[in-house]
Amino acid sequence: GKGTKNPRGEPVAPGAQGKLLDIVQAYYKLAVGGSPELRDEVLGLVEDLPKLPEGKLITSKAKRTALKWQDTLLAGEAPPAAPAAAEGETWAVIDVAESAVTLMSDDGDVLEGFRVADEELLERVRAAFDEGQEVKLELDRATKQALRLKAP
Image: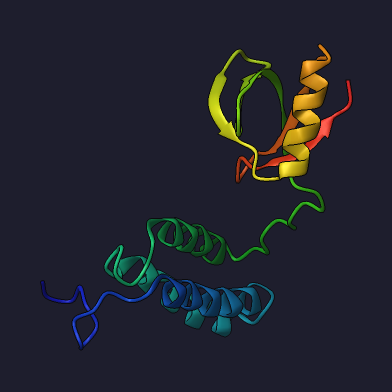
């Protein structure tokens, strides 16, 4: 297809896709606190990112990120400061399997087959669950990774 591949015709490696976003992010961070001229220059760069062929040069997640940056630059405001700690949601563990758990939120949403990447954390969850304790896990709101075991 036209415009979907680099000159040699190969898709761009995922690492290179990430590098492109990292470079634009570095410019974005400079522009947010910088002069209106710099902001305008970087806005042009940020606006071009989502126009790249998705999957070949840019991921759909990177595209969404670029659109958020675009809104921030157009608004001409500094981005909100990143929270110091990851924003967490607490889920109750209602079942423990070999390498995954079943979780339930306060709203009654059920998450089956949730993989706990941290082996040590999974062991602590299993031990507490086997003892009949009420077990709660805190998940990172954004990444849905298990952050920590919540004390009952």
